[in-house]
Structures are given as structure tokens and as C-alpha cells.
Image (tube, rainbow over all chains, first blue to last red):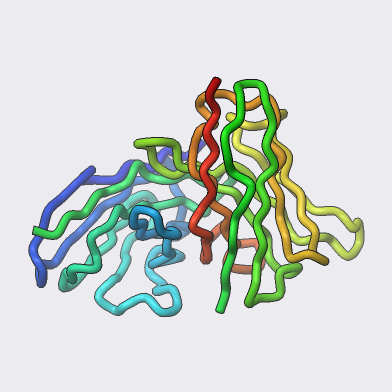
Amino acid sequence: DIQMTQSPSSLSASVGDKVTITCRASQYITNYLNWFQHKPGKAPQLLIYSASRLHSGVPSRFSGTGSGTDFTLTISSLQPEDSATYYCQQSYETPRTFGQGTKLEIK
Amino acid sequence: EVQVLESGGGLAQPGGSLRLSCVGSGFDFRSYSMNWVRQGPGKGLEWVSSITTISSITSTSDVNYADSVKGRFTISRDDAKNSVYLQMNSLRDDDTAVYYCARDRCCGTLDLDYWGRGTLVTVSS
């Protein structure tokens, strides 16, 4: 199975900050990489698919880059509603595997 | 508006069974592959199972399972009811989790674009 490793595991930032979360795959996955936002008690939300494509309705402050094994999710200007846990997921092959999550807290 | 809604969670004993249901609305259900994903207490997301659309040639769907549930869980779908199911047998303590139903974005991709809020399964004696 492809292992997905996210960093950091948690971070705290202020409103307006630029935030970056990284994800590394244990093998080459081209651009088959998705990013999700998950808030407690809510449905996970797809933010980015195919490494850099913004899902419908997702604010443009979210962006994704990367290919091969290294990927990045960036929030350009952090908003209070961005407090959540963020997960990467490889869609290269079955079984689909997720990173362990990055918990983002607003200071 | 695309929506998926899970039901059927609850308390089961080790070795017992439960059947989860998921209803989709706001989209052409028969045209999408569907999935179950779970999150154990204090843990991250784990993909559990997927089922493709029904082939017009064979009248069957392709299914896949995580190794952790293979042989114990069975996924199925009923397009007439816009529903997908997860039959869970031989339940273990580590099957305790919130189970989410999620749609694949399209056309053979493994992208989960719409999810439900989940249903809680607790396995305990």
C-alpha cells in the first residue's frame, strides 16, 4: 500500500496568515492527490483534486501544488472558519490511503 | 444539491453484525461509484470499501475492500433506491468508528467528492 505522510501534525496560526501543509507519498503517484477539510461532526469536504484543481465552491484562498511524491496545500490568508483537520489522500491506486491529518488551530 | 445520508449505526457485540445504509440525492446515483470510509476514535480516515456502477454488459459491479475488512464486510447497491449498503459481519472492537458514505467524483477516478456526516458504529460487549 502507498503510505502518505503529512507534516506538521498540528499547527497554530493567526487570521490572515499564510499556511502551508505538506504531504509525501511513499511512491510515485503523478498528480493523483486530493486534499480534504474535516470539522468535528461534519462531513469531510473535498478541497483540491488532481493535486491542484479546486473543487466546486471552495474558496480561492485554498491552492495545491506538487507532483510525483511531494505535495503542498496552501491557505493564502487564513480565516476563522478554516479551523479544521486537513487530510491528503492518494487516488493513484486501490487501496486509497490517507495521510494522518494536520490539525489547524486559529490563534 | 448533492447529498448523501448514512444510517444504520449503533451498538453491536463482538462477533455480531450490522448493516449500514446510504441514500444519495441530487445526482444520477446509478452513474457514480460509491464508497465507505471510516474514522476510529482518535484516528484518521481509513477507506473501507468501494463499488463501481453496474456494468450494462455483465449487470454486475466491481467491488474492493481494505484488507482489514475483507471477508467480513460486503458492499452492495440498489440503484432503484439510490442506495448503497455495507453489511458488516464478525465485528471486532477495532471496527468501532464513524462510517462515512462518499461518492467518487467521476468516470473511474478515485476522488471522493461528496460525503455524508457519518453514522457511529460501536462494537462492545
